[in-house]
Image 1: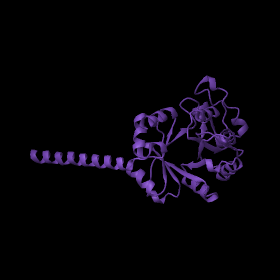
Image 2 (image 1 turned 180 degrees about the horizontal axis):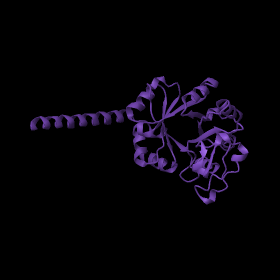
Image 3 (image 1 turned 90 degrees about the horizontal axis):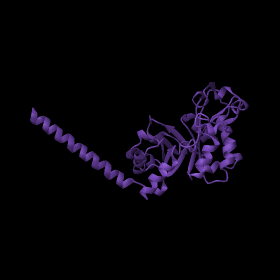
Image 4 (image 1 turned 120 degrees about the vertical axis):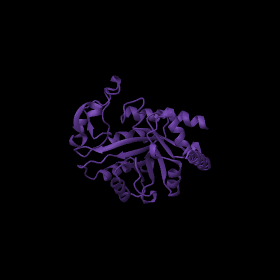
Length: 272
């Protein structure tokens, strides 16, 4: 009996060693050029500024982020504003939803004080404000659509604004709502589309998008390789830890989304 247990443990140890070597060889043979990895400032430079504000977007540009990720949704009067949550509870301690308020009402609300008193004058920006800010820079926008049940021509309106500011080739349009992403594809198939998810329910090839933006906890080198084999890119979110960043680089992701742009820049620079 004891001999059998010892033998079983030997086989387990050998199996783990073989698996480790296999993964190591796989990673080494697939790891890409670290210089090709892009850095996205999540909701702007949100480690040092209040999220999704003009200050955060200016900060991301000053830090030379490759991309800025921002969240957009439609107000009651059909304006496209930059805001993440469905309601104002977390940011402004107001129990009201974005979809139930007109832009003029939202524009009165302080969204900076929760972060620091010196940002008390920050207001919810319009998407057009951000497009105006970045149009003369080199930064690319990752615009995530936050869909609600009162939307009217939401995707069409976003695309109209991108056209108006001549920003179609400097944006990707993303959503956790796959149907919303498909609407964007149908309206203009030249726009680079991104499906954001923490769980892949189907085969990689079934997602008709250009990019899969995945929570870093589900990313592994085999999955990244499969996605690349299907001619799609991989974005990893939200990475604010040096060890996790190193893993994502080893796994050969294309873009690291982070609150802390300088942290990821330092990790990449160390690997050059």
